[in-house]
Amino acid sequence: MKRILQGVNQILLITILFLITSVVSCAKTPPMRTPQGIASLEAVTLGGVKQWILIRGQDRSNPVLLFLHGGPGSPEMPLEHHFGPPLEEHFVVVHWDQRGAGKSWHPGLPKDSMTIEQFISDTHELVELLRKRFGQEKIYLMGHSWGSLLGVRVVQKYPDLFYAYIGIGQCVDLKRNEEISYQFVLEEAEKRGNQKALRQLKKIGPPPYDNLRELGTQRKWLTRFGGGITREGKFSPLIKIAIKAPEYTPADFVKYLYGNYYGSKHLEDEVMTINFLEQAPRLEAPVYFFEGRHDYNTPWELVQEYYEKLDAPSGKHLVWFENSAHSPNLEEPGKFVDELIKALEDTYPKD
Image (cartoon, helix red, strand yellow):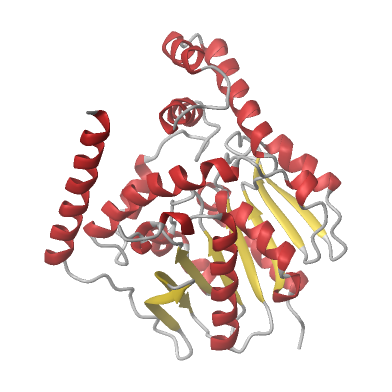
């Protein structure tokens, strides 16, 4: 009976999605009012699947910056209109809703295509498309959380395509990641005397978890205690920004919710096999880790350990954001832009 109800709920969700799609206006991105500017919201085909990208920049001759969102299945395209403009002065910024995520979610997406290797292939295909389109020998690659897992794997495989790699909330060793994260939340609950949190956390116990619901319980308290998406532990400011995004329709937000679950469900087991301390001990491109001092979503201790052990012959940099948790790009946007410009000045070829 439970499976039947789940199936009914999925069918209902898909039905509502397409009913909404039929009545809402099309999404669009505001024009870029500079002579050489670019502002484009468009679909591309990657790995045989239609996927959406947003391209914005004040000068199309500037270096290209491809942003790999987190999740799996948590696009940051809806936040671009608020946080992106300062970056658009220096880069052609590309946001991509990856397969099965946000605007790119579709009920007909093959489940067996949801593998890390397929995402690497999609990323490489998009990188080549962008290099050709903008006449760039190399581009910049930035990954946030799950996007940093994907980013390391892509840079490891295709180092010559990138001026630099920037990891935000860098994934390192996913098994230890969850163990450290759970221990942090448990200690915080004890320190704060939060009996409700203690009961729920002791009920699910330490990882690994049997289902996404148990992981959701841990992440709920991680967020409340300031070690998750933001140090403040609040989603509401980001939600208010996102719902104003001109690039997203109400139907796209329904897709976002469904895709967030879809991506986690189908990639979770494979993601938990990642340990870059062993699997990616050397990266040939210049490496930058932008890490929040309070991050326990991807614990800062592991990022520091990876940085210290990483063999990076083209240079490596660990930049701390003292007032951030997992999202310094959203929590300290001014410093984030400043540090990214420094990386640009250090790595982009001089004329």
